[in-house]
Image (cartoon, rainbow, N blue to C red; front, side, top):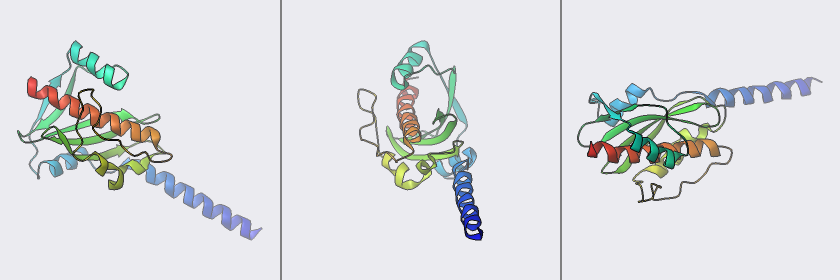
Length: 173
């Protein structure tokens, strides 16, 4: 009986520690911007989302975004985006740095789901480094999935594509 109780307690502790590890703020947006711009982030700018741009984004993501503008940070050399995408049920806040139309850095900033948190680790996010968009608005590479984290992987892949796509439109405006 004591053995069963000890095993039950240990299993619960392992489950709770894994569950609590999933949700959280991994990097404050302000810290992300300071890292991206060597402690000197520029003031934010706004990209106004026109009807045409909204239609293109819908085509790429598969749904309407319900915003009229998005904030970004640009120092003339690189651009940072802080974007959110739903994993399974809740948004994953992600920071993306774009330089020369390629992803320089991608970080999970805030993760709110109970599963799929493995996407925060460099072994996963490093796959996005130097990725760019094809003419069909797809990443130029395949992103390896993580078993049990498919929805989080898909969310970060969408964010990466969106940041690269939006970045091409700030150069036009």
